[in-house]
Image (cartoon, rainbow, N blue to C red; front, side, top):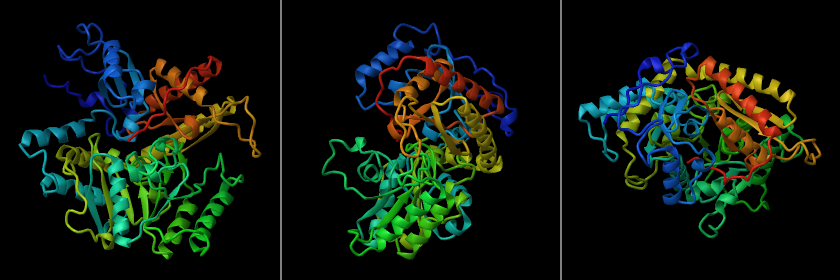
Length: 495
């Protein structure tokens, strides 16, 4: 049985603000979708079997107990017939939302052409088209001498490749990374991240980098906030590297996010990034920028590094570049390309369907100027959320860039720190997530103690959908502030 065809009228058009909110096409018979399905195919039965069969490491399935059966644009329909607005978007993977027509058409063209689906790292027309479109999206100064290495299917695989690359090129082993960072769940990527809980039980298998302070204005590690905090962070980094008694050997590289996602949606100040670039360049330290979640228009520019204008030595890409299918790669300066043949590989690095979907996505985002749309709509959402915060003391901070937005919730009964910042409110955040789901809105949590509501809607979100998100989220926060607290589920890991 073929999956239902999503028609263009049911998805965002070339002008997202004008796209209607339409119901999906009827499910084909025999799929078990919707109410009235056969025995054992309902949502509760499927969730029960998942809990019995899948590992204890499952995450989103615990906090979002729904069974998606169909999806189009920003809308997800569950097996119970309920529809939800999806502000998770596959942890930022779905730049164009679910089942966008240009993505489906690109996948069908490859399937109908008889082209091989698995080619390892052989050259194909599909790969050539993807690489060309990707390089055209990069800052010209970076693209002109860049090389690309296709990696395994997830962003964490590309992070591992980036770390291996700079260690091979420099002959050094150490790494500089930042508090609050997240780069994946494999050993090297996990070490680069700031979440100590994720490394429990892995002593001896994860080699720790030198951890540097990321400028987090709301919970400033220096207790000052603002531009002064960013200046102190940059100064600390340079001073530590130059101190002969600082205990740091010359590192192989530095890895940073231009906007921390899992860390709580914390945009890096542009001046701070520019200072990091000067510091690393002057000392011969390759700078790796993790664009796995921020790339392809998410932050209001095609790549988040373009806000500051810095040119990294290595860029890690995944999620949206695959057009909803698994794909990851690193793009890097040509002079770093010192690998021997076969020094890095991966069985699924030639995913032809993902490359076709990715080419269609990259081109659509560029041609329809969706980064500018994300910037404008993001500013509108931030403004409305900040206005909401003025009347809700439980909202401590609202921040973000483009359509990567965080709402940090705080415990209004807690003791403030010397700057007056209240402690995080993880139980309240979990209750808001649950209340939002009851109202047909999918959101997830991140940040310190999972107290930040994270909004990652597709770049094709319409004006009407944005209003619906704001209304449902506002109702959920108000309801959660009045509700008794509930037990906390385990935090989610997105890669």
